[in-house]
Image (tube, rainbow, N blue to C red; front, side, top):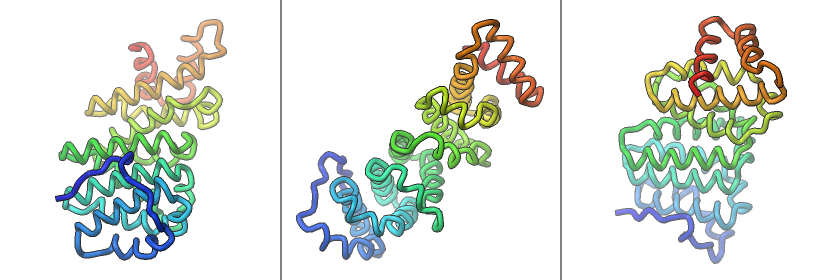
Length: 249
């Protein structure tokens, strides 16, 4: 059996420089229990010795994605917990790993795991996605998430919409405008009429954030200005959905 250890109970290494030497080998072991132990070591490095882990972090993330995709639930959950600790330790530094696509692969796997039927895996992935949103600035993260609102899996679309909504809720008016009011509305329109309530609720939240940013300096007839903006910037069907969503708030 494998114990799922909370981050608070993971202790520093006495000799991290020596311990790091065998980390990748442990992660690539054919013994799944050894891999779980090594994943917990990744967490300990992230929490207490992040500078020691950083030089091999990209490679570690790619192995982490493989473990997350393993059918063995203990491996899957432990790797997701490791992802959360990595987000909390490194934040936006993870976006630098563009050549290997390590961050993009990790993001996709988390969205897929959050969409699973196994409740304890799904809940852990949801927590990890929240850690991601809390530690990475909204503008670069939204660029990563935007492609998933049109994913073929409706649950992945919903989880992406929730993460986008959580990210947008952190943004000030200037940031919302910098990313693009129309761009955000276009990201939300598909989810407004999606089959899952989770997606629809997230989309409404995104739309209302855009509405607040747009109408902040509209002292006279903000409702009319908003309708005019939607109708001039979006297709008639999109504009109708957006105007209706704000009217229902």
